[in-house]
Length: 507
Image (cartoon, rainbow, N blue to C red; front, side):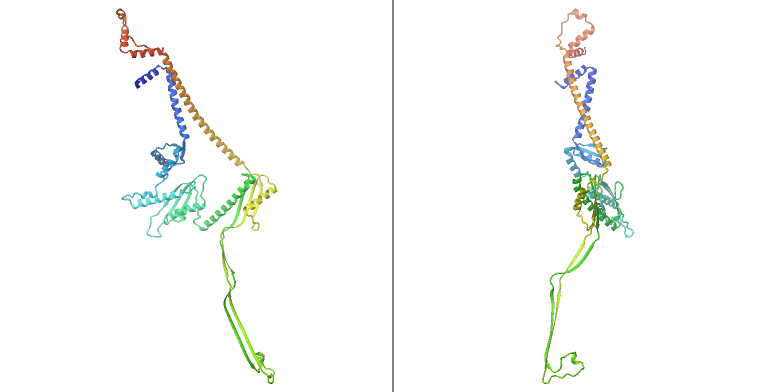
């Protein structure tokens, strides 16, 4: 059976159907096509994952172009800002986009100088240098975890031969932070120092840093070093207090339950820099020199004892008759010099010494005196309480006002229930479409089978046409139309048989 015969048979069956059957089959066919389309879309969405979200039109266009090049199917949503690809090809697509450079479509960095152009002017060269430097700085800044996007604008004045007429360069940086993220002062100073160190002659005071909400992040801390030091001390103090508060929260929540205790710590830190030098004796004394002087004399005489008394006027003293006096003189003098060892100590007191701690703990609900004392002892042990230092701890039981928190939780539950309901309705919608398509397909098949069976049952079996011999007198009595029919039957018996089948089917 060739194709023409199949088409002829189908056409014959279609012509044999009534108008109602034809309209029903057309509607069923359209329903099956639409249901199949929506079912295919639903299956595709179930197997697709988000590749990138919150894209700019320029970025989305570059990514879509790369996806078309590697034949990766994709779906766009959120006005083209979100691109979804099959789940099993997400990693492949990201690696290819990163390799092709489609993820950094905001501008070109030093790649501008990879190809040198003939006839380029000095002005164009300077503009390309500024563009490349801005893009390289942007690529470096967006590496911070808190930064989602950045724009860098540099003002590079032309160099002048007169130093007084030379204008200083300046820079402006706009940051788009990730949701819930923020930059601390240390990170802000780091970004400012990065830009200032990358541009010749640019000082930190000429770098302005803002976020997409218009907040000035850099401030004036770079203009006064004392202000920067004060902010640094404040950050150190707050970081130390936050660490102690987290430790107290971890301990007390295990005791009184989560969300039933609040601990606040105030630390008094001494940031003054002190240095003291002291010398103390050290070791045994050592003899470094020794000197001894000795004098001796002996003799006889009649005089008195030499000295002051003998030289003073007074009564005469006469020696004994026939007697003599012996004289002996001896003197010894010793001088010894010692050297004592000394130990010199230099004590440097680093800034940040803790001078006093004040702690306040608020517990939700009623707390007995014994319970409050136990909590106070736990807090004292956790903080290293020192009464001589002047530390204070206060534990106060109070009823927490949870109205706002309960309202937020209720809104969150409602939002989650609404999202779940939407997802459930969407699933029901797609399931209904799929079920309708399946039912329509089954009905179409059943109707087609019934129609074919009815056609076959109603169609009479036409035997081969056997020419009959008609007597001359009968032939002469036939009309002209009857003779034409007879001649047509002789010439085209098959077509006449098909016409008879159609007539019998309609009757």
